[in-house]
Length: 362
Picture 1 (spheres, rainbow, N blue to C red):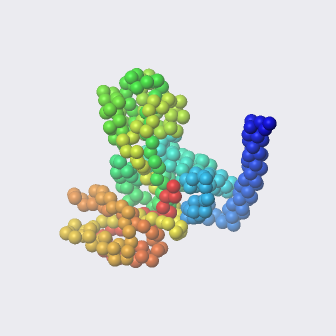
Picture 2 (tube, rainbow, N blue to C red; picture 1 turned 60 degrees about the vertical axis):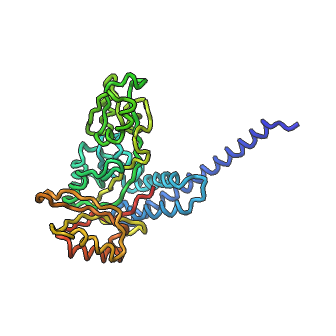
Picture 3 (cartoon, rainbow, N blue to C red; picture 1 turned 120 degrees about the horizontal axis):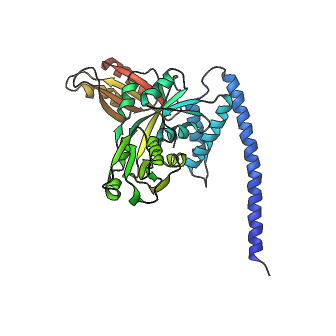
């Protein structure tokens, strides 16, 4: 009589042996890849080690070639770490971000560059810019806009002044959680978080903690730190902050919009070549007369260039004067975009190209 348990055990061991063999083959291939990366690094000499367009092309090719069962995002995430580790053999990058550790900006650094970088926390967005401008760090990651709360004004204002250029973007799904040392909602006496995060959770807080004071602080990570030191305090922050500050997740997914997403720009000191799926960002002013904005947008329609975003900000040069931040589909070297930009430059009193860069991959 055949024993089903014996058959199952044999099949189990067969699969495990196959996995062991594949792991050794993956390890061999990873080190072979790393050796090629090291050789390329030597050939580059002193040129930029990090090539955003090349990494974007690699990730897009792998996603398109992926037969499953691993989902595309998982494949992209795995190979992001592989590329990060290989680049670190050549030179470990330093990345400035809005800290402290555990913020969503910190998460955006890991998502875009992988874990094999030196992430440098800064106390403000201004300090993030200064770190990259001065060469203290190689790149900076700054928040630009949130799908619920809109643009991050300070980032846009500083982009008008900086010599840094946009070399990439990150779109990070924001999952807010209520964190605390307390064990139940009934024991929560105050809630800390960044002002934007509190705004993203208004309905949940009104329903579950209607009488509890909400206190805005500099970052979600700072909120988590405070919650870890004060009895009865809670914080709205991400899972990373919970792990760093040893807090329990009293409630997960407390954001009001399940699609809540924040977009970040990656800033550097060099231009980026075409990747095949790019965006171009610029800022411009319009003359103070009827139809001026329409006249500026006309070259885009004329040359068939799609506009993904138009955001106005006070120009700070005079009452009721505005700057317009625009995101376009395509790279500045693409013929339609180049022609549209040339016409815009002739029409706009002020025009600054902020960068052409690969669109977010995942």
